[in-house]
Image (cartoon, rainbow, N blue to C red; front, side, top):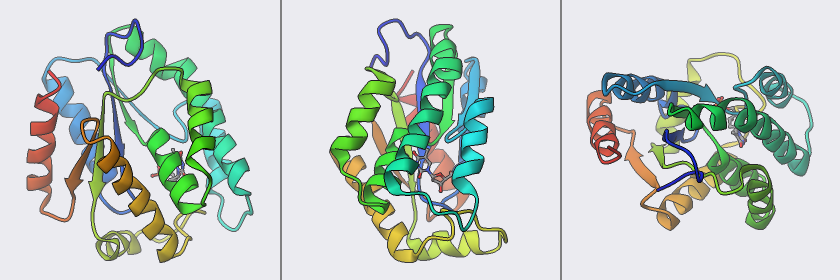
Length: 210
Ligand code: TMP
């Protein structure tokens, strides 16, 4: 799939609720691609630029009230900077971009979790992204109980991590709905298995991209 008219690199995103092993597997993806000879840029959302990281800090401070639409607009403000400064230039110069979360997270968290209409999110996505979409999204999924247990030992909880189990259940469902709707792009990976099995599957999925 072509992400932008001129892009030569590929755009891969990693998604999933907290505690499913996103960070470990993101590094794995980046290393696999480097081993295959690609120049890789690793990034994350919200964040990835100086401004985006400051917006991230605002979004994650615990015990702050941010209305759902404000939260969504901040996510897209950070995304606009990230696309402009990092993602588009990297893709246009032939680099592969591996990003920890992107617009699917807005559908899952602000759509599923906060209840904002999908049409609102789609409107912002077309404004900010134009026709750019990930070529591949790895959706790591594990039962909420497993994800919560893995997360429990981490101590400090940010504003999202403070949310209820019901919130994460809606987020997870929204992610699974996205995978059902776009099975070619969004590849569902069962993360409730030993890491070696998860990474073997990721390796197979990545091989299909070449
Ligand atoms: P992270 O801790 O996984 O890096 O992500 C930070 C939080 O931001 C995480 O709880 C999910 C949330 N998020 C959204 O709610 N909407 C978005 O569009 C993005 C990119 C992240």
